[in-house]
Image (cartoon, rainbow, N blue to C red):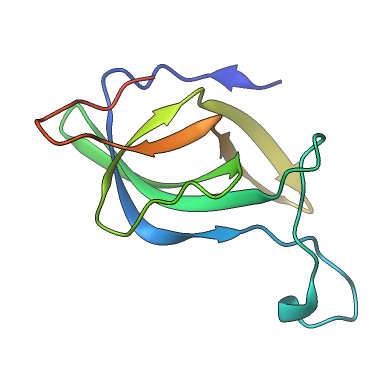
Length: 113
């Protein structure tokens, strides 16, 4: 189950450049893996962000369809964010997904959903 996240009280900073997600292919080197695509056939990308809010910060990775065209050090707005818990082979975590990640405009615009 994907849980919606209210990002209206958070700010987001890009800490690593966006990169396309790869589909694991056994026996092939990572560089040769095909891009992962969503159900619409759009390539999935991942962006590493710092989520800032309530005096705390957390580094998260967010997946989204299409290249968000954001750069390291840029403040961004995350739209349509959801979270989903996962477990695989004794490991677990939280996967974050967004409909879009957009650069903030100048003039102090706050990050909002």
